[in-house]
Amino acid sequence: MTAVLAHDRLIDATREAVGLPAGTRVLAAMSGGVDSTVTAALLARAGYDVVGVTLQLYDHGAAIQKKGACCAGQDIHDARQAAEALGVPHYVLDYESRFREAVIEEFADAYLRGETPIPCVRCNQTVKFHDLLDVARDLGAAAMATGHYVRRKDGPGGPQLHRAIDPARDQSYFLFATTRAQLADLRFPLGGLQKPEVRRVAAELGLGVADKPDSQDICFVPEGRYTTIIDKLRPHGAEPGEIVHLDGRVLGRHEGVTRYTIGQRRGLNVAVGDPLFVVRIDADARQVIVGPREALLTRSLTLKETNWLGDEPDLAAAEGRAVLARVRSTREPVAGRIAGAGVVFDTPEEGVAPGQACALYDPADTTRVLGGGFIEATVQAE
Image (tube, rainbow, N blue to C red; front, top):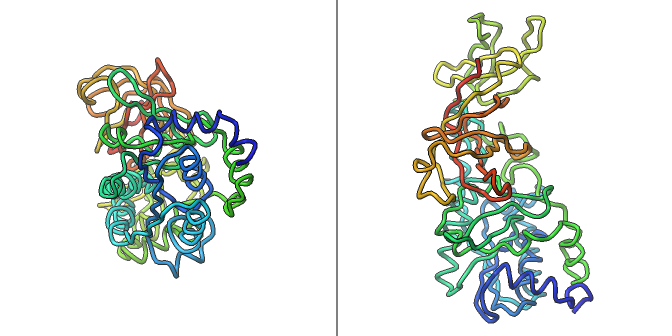
């Protein structure tokens, strides 16, 4: 055992994160990347009965050519090799049909509705947590551990979800949909570690993925061009329509609403003297509505498919509660209040797009995730 791992700190931290006696069976979700591999390694060295499981989510032949993907091709090979090196049993499950239905098809349909989808949330919400937790139970595991950078804490009302120690790696935004029941069975051993420390552990253990690049972009989208997938699955999304100014002027034509997202400035190919931004997409009318930057300011939003992890029984019971709302993974949360099935911002927020996630945090403990939902509609600031 290496000097780093011989130190009680990492082993104790892993046992604390898992909260189960040594020898307990824990399923390790192994994607083939450095994070999930180190998670499995720490579990094994902490004395747990580890079973590694990898989900094959889309075609090996196509996916193996894409660098920085996950859950296919080379990544499955890397996960298998890592499990062998760690001496833990490993299973590969074919979930391609489920992934296509729950994530890829929904991704394409969202763009047809004029939304900006976030498929990583859907993947965690359905395939990786809901379905894989069922597999964990079938294999007799008491918990499932993943390499996500979030923390699970036991609170007075049950388990809570918190942001990771490393703010640059925090993935809490993508996990807002994790339910109370799922959180009871999930463990996140890396939530209290910095990313460089994780890579150092992998290197000192001699794991082949120590220097492997992190996943980039959306795993099933080739070279980041999402329109390639949409055009293939929903070719009618490329039907032309009008680019319309907020004042009603028709400024030009477009080649499909799926080519545009809220806040987009480049590629409009229209001009009125001042910069224009996409402020709304009317998919039914096949119109892309543009306007000045101030038209992007949003006073409030309505959520659908909400999930609540706060102390109240549900979102409705939290009416009027102060929250911190995060509408993009790259933005910090901003102050607001629960109003109905949505949030009213204290100060208007820019570029809030239907289809994106809105993760909610506790102002009294800014690391705690209160839940959230998918943005269904917005109200423009006056």
